[in-house]
Amino acid sequence: MFLKRITLQHEKIPSYHEYPFTIPSIKSFDKLDLNRNVTFLVGENGSGKSTLLEAIADKCEFNTAGGNRNNSYTVHAADAALGEYITLSWMPKVTNGFFLRAESFYHFATHVDDTDMSGYKYYGGRSLHEQSHGESFLSLFLNRFKGNAIYLLDEPEAALSPQRQLAFLRIIHDLTINGDCQFIIATHSPILLGYPDATILSFDDGCIEEIDYEMTDHYKITKYFLDNRERFLKDILED
Figure 1: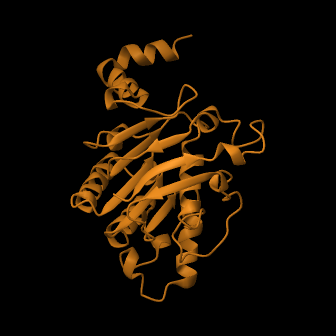
Figure 2: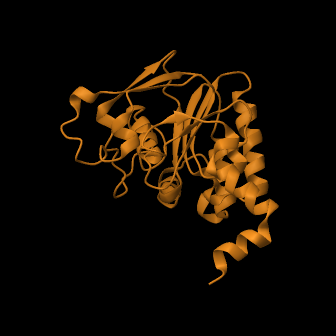
């Protein structure tokens, strides 16, 4: 792994009453130490996990709309408001990698159509727009993701069926088994969160803290639903 620590530079913050420091988990952390090849960021929508992930991408000089240093295009609202207030500590530093922003992946695919000169070598041999949403994500993971790199993924499960999420877990395993790739993934998927020996950082409760898989709401709610489907649905649907 490469990225070892993320530090918030509190002395540079002009006001804790302005975004993104109105997010409790963001304004309250001082530093985050990363010690495993795979780190998951979990929490409710608006809890700050995507905000932090975009800031890391910005400091890596990846396109915060999606892509890496070589993908130059713009999408509205892709600015990383937190980027100038964090520092990244590396050992060693890497410049290869990719930032996947699921909500703007369509724009990335259009950018590839406009600029690709390789016959879509890194995307399965055809335009991402000519593949299903899930196929295009897997084509990216299988063909463009290589070793000696850091991958920042914001809700990659958005396009993946449960079966393809399992296939993606195998891709993560194959890329990290020798320690030459690092993944930081914001997700709501209980399947992805089950990846062994990963760190799970929760952004709920106004702070960022490491939790066990079985303590995530994603696991607990999914397990309760599967074990008690009829009772669960009756409780939430009855008048």
